[in-house]
Length: 622
Picture (cartoon, rainbow, N blue to C red):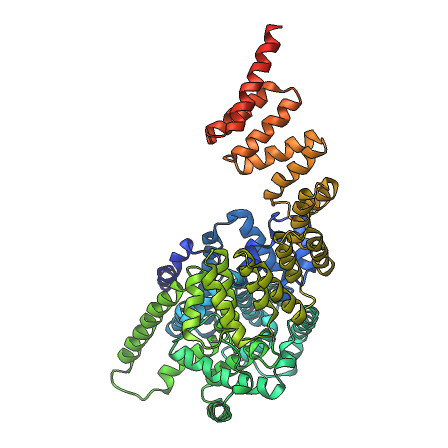
């Protein structure tokens, strides 16, 4: 019965995501602009997933999960969303099951699972497609605890090895699971009540080795792409201060989940010393109290250390990125606090006459409020615009979200608004290359190419090793008619990132316009090698192949284009021209007629059709 209620509750909150879109904040890099996942599950994809450090992480199982999603759902974002929801449901049910198994306490376990299922801080992990790594790694985390619990009951090697394998799979989904060996030790203390001994410590050595290996891999991957540059930006004192405040802030947001945002800007040196001191004192006092009560109520210290310990990898002591904190980091860490609430509510409350009734009503009110708040928070994830506008309403000086918001406005053609937002973000962070780059793109689309070029030059000055800037700069130069200069910058982008699809595509188009068709074909072929699912390239490849009389290949390119875009009248006409050239009059006539069905006003197609019909009639009379 509890399981059914949990599933229904989650669906009530999260089912609307089947109508939601991708958001232009990591979803592009992870999914819809990631050509590496678009070929489906193949040996090449598997090899890539296990060897890449793309997007700052080594998490091959997450990549394979996204690959399978793309194979199933393609551009239907709702399908990707629903897989996240399914994993969240499984995580909730497994969490309930493991706590019932370990504690034999149904209602406290039900509260933990329900709070996990419905808390607004967890909306980000479920509703954000790019955070598949959160829900997937947690799935393996809880399975690891289940296998470990079974191992502690019979101490059989097969259960120990299964525990280790599941843990490794969790690390291959998200490296945040490096603290799981610590969690297993906490479970040994309570609720498993295992006798503290060297055996317990030595059992964890293989797990610690895996955690160390994952940490080393993550460090080198993130260092290699500059993701850890924030360590230099924020000194240790600032990082420690922010970590202390974040620990308390997460607790306050757990209690009162207001003003939640997808990105919280790091305050840097603007941190209040008084606030740091107060938060630090609270942490110390809470820790002393729980230590004092540890023997009498073991769950208090276990829950508290679970919360403190599992946040360590993401609390900001090792700063990655420019965020102060993130809602997604609480997905499994808040479980420690839920343990304290669930088991402490009954044991620590005074012995009132109607205590059980009060606890039951309180739990219902809390969980109902969580449900309503989560439903409201979920609505902000509907699309990029709703997400970014909400974030800008609840945060200050958020130049990163301003940048992303302006990029979306640019794509939608709302260029004046985009330029205004870009300029606002520049007033906060004038030396951030990505803002200059985005503003340059918006200005280029407005036809203000000279202004755009100045911003691209500044972007290169601030970040000279970032390939997309050179690609966008080259596009502006092309639009200005400086095609050879554009070629130079497209090639500079490829020097920095040889597998970058966009400059290869752009070079193909540029060489086509310069009638250097062999070079154009070379780059179009490279696009298809890197991104086999790229159908648009075939229409441009057709032009180059037809121009140098590689007619059979041109026909093939035309047919592929038509299959993907059957209402492309121009391509039907072009196919007819090639077929006519080969003397395949019947097929050519069919292509011309199809083009006219799609667009009856095509004068040149009417002329071509009349000409071939006369030619065919003359041939028949002979």
